[in-house]
Length: 135
Image (cartoon, rainbow, N blue to C red; front, top):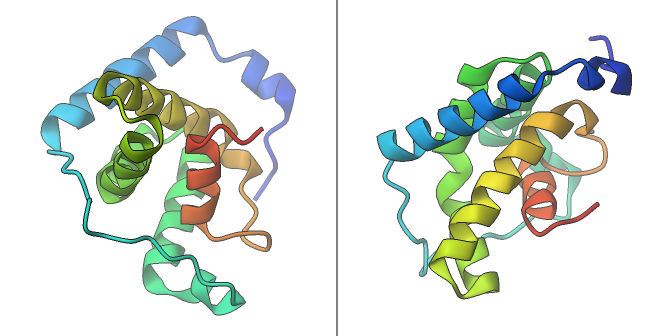
């Protein structure tokens, strides 16, 4: 799979990013995101976690997102939005800020999906780092 360069991203128009925000709002309306207060996310330290079916599917969706597939973004949002939102609501302790941060996180996932490296982390760990504002 070819790496997408920064030049490619410079060509993405502002209308495409605005359209992405509309897609995220539409997906938010389709999926009811519930707080996962009693759930704990545990990241496995072993490399086998990336070989689990859910991690493989998330990695496949990230690869599709890197190629510009908005349906893959919607699917990833549906699969992992609840956990990320739960994390953000706990960190920020404000529902409005958590919603804004959630949207920002998925915009960054859209923009940076080409940077995901399965050798360095699981897809979920990578998404959590983005949601928490990791550079």
